[in-house]
Length: 242
Image (cartoon, rainbow, N blue to C red; front, top):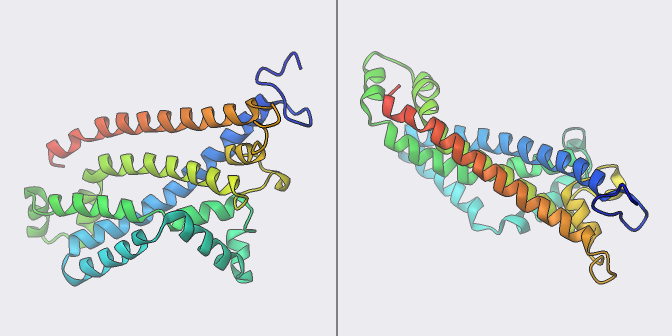
């Protein structure tokens, strides 16, 4: 106990060590799912914004439809639907696995990114360098890949950091209610630690709930600060018009 800086849990496991492993798993979930969702959102938003017309209207109405439903309720419903499909298990894994949570948040976190990127593309596609690319016969794919997406890096990086934080908090919420990765599956995330400490405060083990929650707050603030710094570093590219 003398070496347990943050105390131990009810069966004597060092909470500090469990927090280290929990942060690793939570960051894996956040980063992997954010990369999937931001990639999907950037593709949908850039193509919809550049093409415009009916295609843009249809894609934005689909996006609005997804956004109309409560996020966590939608995740729970989709979780049960996907978990009941045996042919998807080689891809997604079991419903309580880390891989399943990554796929779940990755496939249903792209809508906000799509709207942000679409708005950025709508403002960029009328600029001189895009018009010049059109004039020399550049294809839509080339213009999107060479001009529009690179000049949207600032908003995309901010959206990426928000997606990472959202996935970490979302996984913690699901785990708290017993729908995320479970402690008995060999994984330890911050959500699992918070969920395992549900009744800890009433029994006097306050540190089992306080330290994981503090770690969630620190991670969320740190990632948001990183996102602000990345946005400031990438925004000047817009003014160079490349």
